Image (cartoon, rainbow, N blue to C red):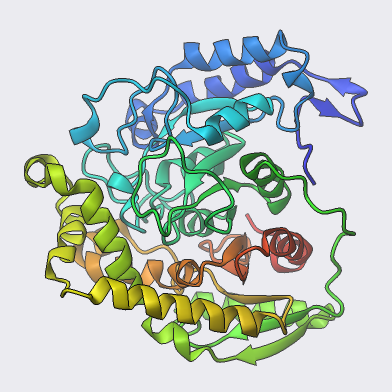
Length: 442
């Protein structure tokens, strides 16, 4: 599950050079229109990328790494030595370049991965839809008139369009899983404390997590092993028969649009037909998740940005600024109360989870909305898109998303999740479910 290097195939009998593979990837970026590439990358330095590939080819130790030769786009909130971390905000564009790599970037490079450009995102990672007035909106890989999802918007497009093998993303309320699901990809949000955040521009220290977006869960699992510095437990590949899975109805199954409801029903049927025991579950504690998240994340985001709010009023995304400023309306003691309620809900969930192997729900309750729709109705649609994935963050759980739409349809995702600490079980179960749920995804 962990060695996913594209340079070594058939147990090393076929060996390839990183420079050749990376050069072909650079060619694909160069073939894009400037406008398109500029909406995916905040910065793409082909010379820097190729130098990294050349250095890998000359390093026999890293060439044996589990990610050797994988191209991984870097969300523009992770530090890379010599690069400016802007968090996709013009306010931060004049910062000094980072002096060192973020811990996760160091780990990826040590495992043989090749950083492949810095990708656009919602400003400060504070939106689930992927709008950005500074760099533009990448659009959706299946329909450019629709949103890419956020906040790892450019990262999702870099993988969905075949430019990079993997995208390094962050997930505070769904910022890995939303763009993954909206673009027909797999994605994984780990338990919040699993992957170090050193060198990542913060949004909320209580919720921020780091995870990959890729074509399938196998690749996500291999990258996650490197990011968290763990060796996966030595268990046999999970089989569907006998798994006991909770189908969560409270909040997560409400207000589904027609396609998501149909795709979810097909996924549930496929799992049932393959021997999975599916049990309907109500979780009353989830009803307050959105309000509690808003208070805690909003309070922490306000503390991050409090010293430059005046500047953001001049140059920031007004939608993001409005979310940051919402914290000024919270009453004294409201944040402390929210933290207590969150802790109680987490304890309840952990107790419930002991009776199940995992839980499932639609990753997002709607297909990717049109950009014009979101611009006209931002607050409602942003909250709707964030609702399901952010509920898992509220529970401090871990979650994978896998595509569940039929070929030719707009992308939808199935979210497989569990309590904090169940990361490897959730990845194994998601990988087990993938062939049954994918329905010949385009």
